[in-house]
Amino acid sequence: AQSVTQLDSHVSVSEGTPVLLRCNYSSSYSPSLFWYVQHPNKGLQLLLKYTSAATLVKGINGFEAEFKKSETSFHLTKPSAHMSDAAEYFCVVSSTSGTYKYIFGTGTRLKVLA
Amino acid sequence: DADVTQTPRNRITKTGKRIMLECSQTKGHDRMYWYRQDPGLGLRLIYYSFDVKDINKGEISDGYSVSRQAQAKFSLSLESAIPNQTALYFCATQRQSGNTIYFGEGSWLTVV
Image 1 (cartoon, one colour):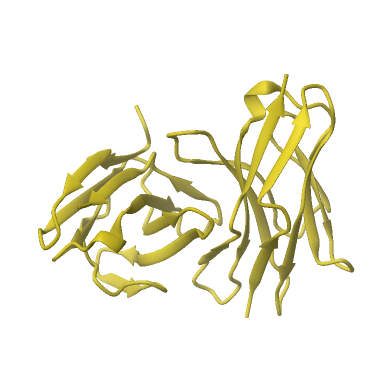
Image 2 (image 1 turned 180 degrees about the vertical axis):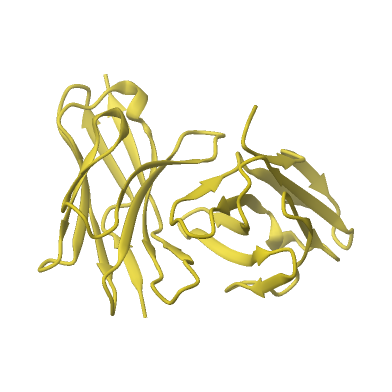
């Protein structure tokens, strides 16, 4: 069985400071992992994905995530937060059963303070 | 124009009414999905379809039905809406051999 846990439901940072959104996963097989962002009244947009290539994955808007198998983690980071980063972020693990069903975390709402 | 289009974007309906949410895509993807989003619960899979003749239940299919009218169209129906079906609904598509899922902008449904 696969599962994903986002460790913080809300994160607040000041503009210009680093962002860390934490995600742990559980998977019986080598997983595919994703981060999606959802801005208010918008759909989900893919930030980045890990599919067993490089463990450090770079995404859009300066975000990156590192796959750490020993820690079963896939934390999302950004060196310097921007006001436009305020949104909800979802960590997702993809089933490897052949159906490619996604399992979503419960989301982390990022607030960026001026 | 959006690659994955959902209609309506917002709807208020009464308990017991039938409501249909429609999804169309221009990405040419074979796989289509319907998800439901509730605060604090993330997204949960309602139904999915890997091609026009393939329909599968997700984790929360009770109270819902779907129809895959064409490769590009996948509709979700609530035959008799109830208040706890008030949620944000997302349609999504996926290329058969790929792994990224692409989402529509969502349909807010309120059942009163």
